[in-house]
Image 1 (cartoon, helix red, strand yellow):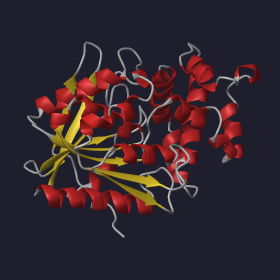
Image 2 (cartoon, rainbow, N blue to C red):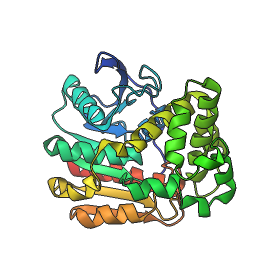
Image 3 (cartoon, rainbow, N blue to C red):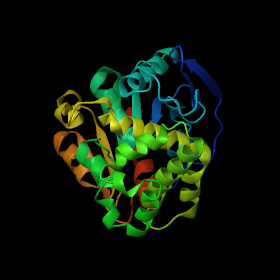
Image 4 (tube, helix red, strand yellow):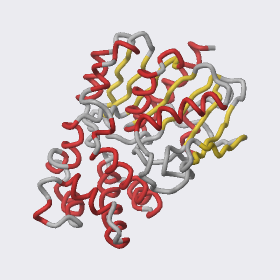
Length: 316
């Protein structure tokens, strides 16, 4: 079974001004002359970490990470103003242009798969392939499953903690109620809601309970950005049309796409990956039988590293 590559350091870091308000953190590691690959993190609002460099052979890849608007080391933190999907797609183009890259491989999981697909559909000539994990199509039914009714049947104990910040009379529309709490001027209410929202996601992300994952999601800096930005995007239907990704798959049908998805993914159920696979004739679907949603579960990591190695060989 493949594991992550050894730890490496970034050899270049950037602060990229993408608007009058937002400045993004971006970095490069690996081989400056290698295959350009962009790691597209999840959330939205999740941010990237040094661990994310380790899915790629540093001798073969020019590894680019960036924090999307409002999260990680990008500023201003947890900011919702001028933060929407088209802006993120434009930001990726600005990074590509600034780094002098003609075309690149995209590697994204969860919301990172959503954004990678939307970018590829907008700029197919700039993409040489896709490695996608934990497919999230961002349809209303996908949001309802995790934030209203569906996953609660699998994790009824965790669900009670998720419900706790929301008054009973507002629980018929939890996404709306959470959005109100997370944009409230009451800082105590905002932070309590952010932690409950984020911990719910962390608890459901792995097949086996993982306290380290939950602790990361519970970190106040992480939780506030992730909860606020996710609720902002999801209350606005991710700023895309209904079923937009599947309906526009013809624009990327020619791209080699490797899809990796846990059989027991409770955050983004497998039917989303299967629906995407059926629309992309050049895609492969790898269903990991003993995994949930997290990229760091052994079976998911194994498949993702094999995918990056496969692309490295094919593109050499």
